[in-house]
Length: 410
Image (cartoon, rainbow, N blue to C red; front, side):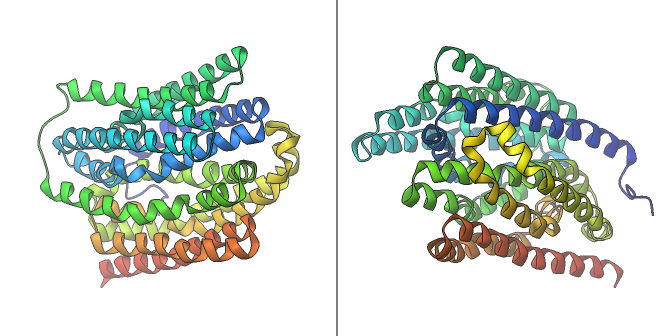
């Protein structure tokens, strides 16, 4: 069987070309951005920027991320009205998130005694309405408009990096840096969504089923988001900003080798899988999972060999202590590979039971293991907790995919 059958080869050429290009360019710009930050900021200031990102991530449920996931499948089937309604919902939710960020700013000022930290959170709160909005990307995914995904993502990140560089030419003030980082991202989100909402090409047909699934899966993000941010939340709260900076820099590998490629894979597969019968889609994923495993594992192996030389070169020698964390995150990536693609199948077909069980595993296991292993072994234990979580969830994903696929042949 050819690798790209039974999916259309023209589709995969387009998806691989534009989204693969996005991964390469976006990752290079991301590394350049991180290099600028680490080389020009103290470890404490970089840790403060990571802390801001942690809180923004913790507040992700206010942006109704489940609605975003449902929009991909709905738009793929012609229900553009779900994008229109979902965008308004996410903007309103993000406004609430901005107000909550003002509360964190007050905490930094009145409790922590950090005016700098307070102004950093105020800078994020001002652009709150656009921080958690991503329905434009979901709309383009559903329409298979990967060209738009590429250009919007690359241009937004390039402007962000250029603005950060310009700020450092003037000053290394962390408040200005934070404003450039979060402000331009939020502005880019709002401009893209606003343009699509005004476009006559975006229809109004609406699916109540996908809307209900979006609300349902948004609730699941409450526990899942806490689990995703719990590691950095514990380190930032109990160990301080410098250890948080080292941990976050080690985690970059997880983002560039797993999270970003996983998101791209979801963009490539979601609308196609939504159009296929669920059993046929499961059979295809099952037959080709080994390609993902071999490719990602090989990338992790090559990365492991180059780490001692590349990390100090890109991020400066003052972050050399983060290399040990980077090695452990490579193990986490290998443990998570079996999950890639399968979760997209659940979302594409609005499979509530499978989505609920998988999210419960990914959300509840860290709530127990991260505090326990973190208390025993610090940041190393926290990363090991993530490895165990990924491995456990991978077992469930593999079993469920096999069950669905076998149902097709029975």
